[in-house]
Length: 212
Image 1 (tube, rainbow, N blue to C red):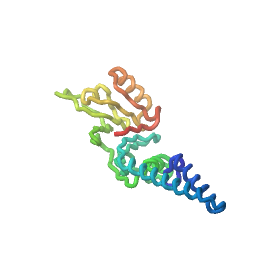
Image 2: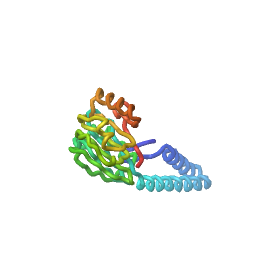
Image 3: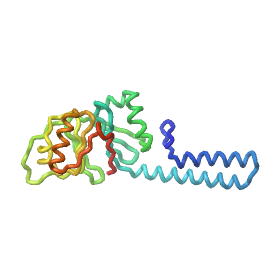
Image 4: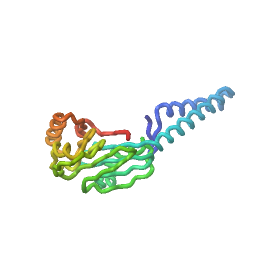
């Protein structure tokens, strides 16, 4: 896709714009009536694609764990609003923000962003998906029934054991962000494999994006 500042344009839309310019030029300079018809049809197509894209973005629900070295940056996107959970220093660091966050916001047409402190374990429910963010150790507890969650994001390099997570949560997938030590991630991955728990390592596999 082609991107200008705060505007995302797909490859198809970009080619349609070029075609529109060519048709208008042909109509103006060569006086071809058919070129005007083509220009109007192309303009209508651009407007239609833009409307479809805006509607699609208004309905989107996403979980994003950014791949930013040594920083916790997780966003829950609902429509064109984003809830940022993590290190808010990224948002004031223009270089980090412009390189990592702004392109994503442009792509997904985000208009409003709010922040939420990530100084304790958190839980969110979005589109019937249960999301847990762990940055503190868990006490292993014997529960009558495990808590069912869809995604667990581990951040902040906590002293955490997968067996403790498994004792508390019935989890579909676990994500390790870039604030965790690689040696610890490797240990967690082996523990996940032993209990057949799906995982995603952001520093090794890149940013995690999930439709909710």
